[in-house]
Image (cartoon, rainbow, N blue to C red; front, top):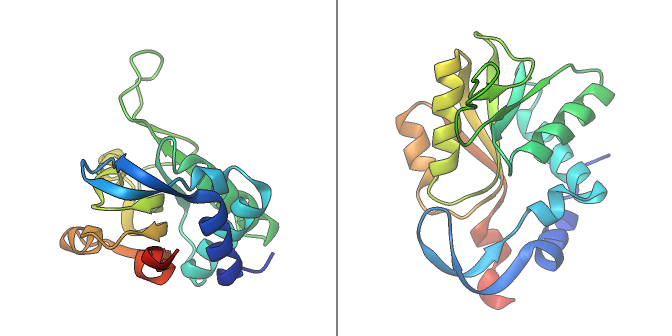
Length: 183
């Protein structure tokens, strides 16, 4: 599937955008909410997002993609699947919100190994808190992380925070492109 940015915009506007008063993970209050799980958990949405993120990778293939459970899980799975269909073997991983108290007690789950080059994937980035936690956990595990790919960047400071730790943020959509005020 080829990435179609205009189609992704349409999917976001019709499926993921909600208006009202919402408390964001960052603690901020907003008059709209982007629930991108409504996209990542559909066939067309998952394929558009994976195709777009593979395009952002620009043939700089990491060993693995993943991020904070639950938002990153379907994104990572879609990328892994679409990349494999293109002959690229990328592993997926999940960063738990809390350490497992039984079994191996892992924070990071998946077929990854220390030394793997990893890209963190995210649905919506506001201030970057969830991505920063995923980066820290992946680095603590031993992976090398220097990129975050997001569906939507709300443009509220995450890019600057990531730069201070040597991580580049790229997104399929910037909030300013969505022109939420005119919808």
